[in-house]
Length: 113
Length: 110
Image 1 (cartoon, each protein chain N blue to C red):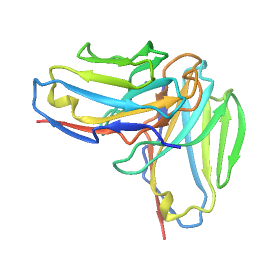
Image 2 (cartoon, rainbow over the protein chains, first blue to last red):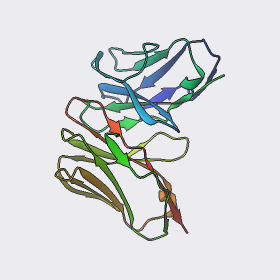
Image 3 (spheres, each protein chain N blue to C red):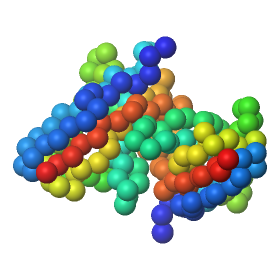
Image 4 (cartoon, rainbow over the protein chains, first blue to last red):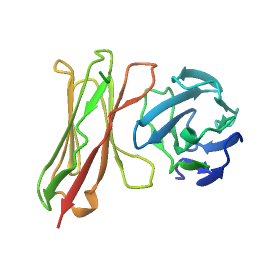
């Protein structure tokens, strides 16, 4: 059974650009959540989707946005990139309601220069 | 004060020893508790999932939840060098976001 797939694995962008990251959940999973991981702040919650509806949102600026499609795949977008956005972005999927086990992908490592 | 506190370590143990990890939390609404293992430059891997209080065992891993003390633990028996990683606790209230501890770095020395 395939796990959570995140693409791309690595990305280098310039300040001011925008970026779109993709997450394909485990087959049959309907909930997807996104996290930012940095050495200083640890894992911080960005947002969570269930059946295309955003259920929860973290304390990030509006430059961070996301969506979920009818096939449960999800994308997150960061506009006007800043140096501080350099991080590992992780996606997790859950089978049904977000309260069930969350399984993570390998992440997308974003470097902003 | 953070909602979930976890000692960052590093915790160094000899091979074969029991690794004891724990987290404390302040939100009494937390009901779902998870432990993850994360190797360098990889995504977190789910080890244990527990609902409410009690113990759960899976192979060499035992998770304990004490909601009255707002304290959760993970024990790893017969530790191996391959267990060297960062261990993250995570928890959530029903319908709310998953909140992580900062992680404990564990080193198992051969």
